[in-house]
Image (tube, rainbow, N blue to C red; front, side, top):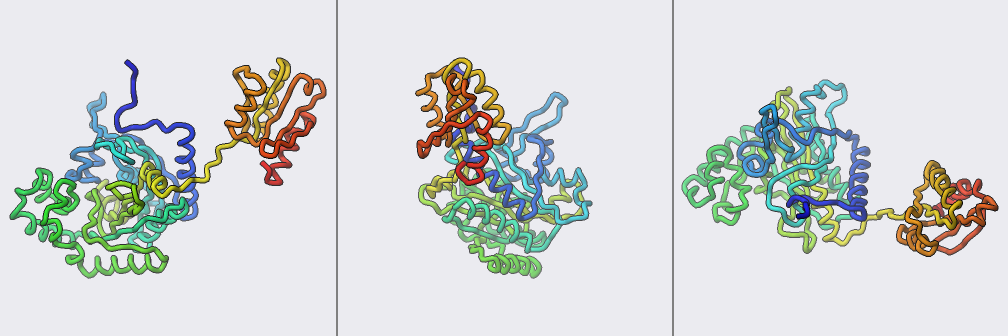
Length: 427
């Protein structure tokens, strides 16, 4: 029996991986402009990290984590999201002591959640995200939102909507929690078992329930915006003011709560409005998490960030029929005819590569016609033709594949000739 790929995972093959590389390179360049530095954390962490940060009442912790016991008897979890690990690294490496604050970081890598695979959603998926730690300025919230909106604009997405909400500070959430408990408690038996357990621990999670989202009590649930104290309300007004100042359109949705317990104040999602994208429209989610650094053992440090799935970003690009400007051609293909020419071609290919050109040649002893076909498939801009006759004259034929123009030049002048063509924009 053949061994197949595990359900909920995918092989990303040549021809497709170039899109991923383009997106990742674009994201890195935008992060450079915003002065965010890359951080890389382990793929697995101690399970307690996610219990303390993500929240025991979340679907991620209760149903979706890949958790196992290692040979030392320690509970280990494949990371289901990136923020907790970044904050753990921030605390453990005492990055809060760096003279330049806030600490602005970005990451990209595989995450793991055991959930039902569907279009654009996998059990192993790649997440790109940023975290800004060390400032409670609402302008930082807008900077983080601007960064991801800038990424989407640069990639060509147009049919996206930014949705924001405030989850308030601790006092605001306490008042809202009491109102939600009073609202749902009389009819909680009509809800799923998860919602029943959430009623006491974190009733706001009920608003995020997928099973009971059409229950009539959901539409009449108390809004967090009605329970914001003066400080939280002023903060949220500042965020909206700054978003308008940088010309970012947004909608306020009081029902937006996000799926993780560590959020407070600003919460946001970016949705795709593209036809055919799917029922789950969220492309990106994030928010402020003041208090998370303390929860993981660090000093009082405010923070905000977002994360997006590369898979869902690709789905959105497909839904809008956006073709990324992927460069799939090579500079040269070396075609040989004759045993001696084939031997010499090895050093010519090596010298061309050392000079910075992308080059390939035949390794299957194909006829000359088949070698030219291979050059066509690789979209080679130039073909270097070397036969024993040319070799006797210490020469090669250089053919421009687009125009068909061909000229014989010495082997020694091959690299200078190609470098000149590159300087003229012909290569």
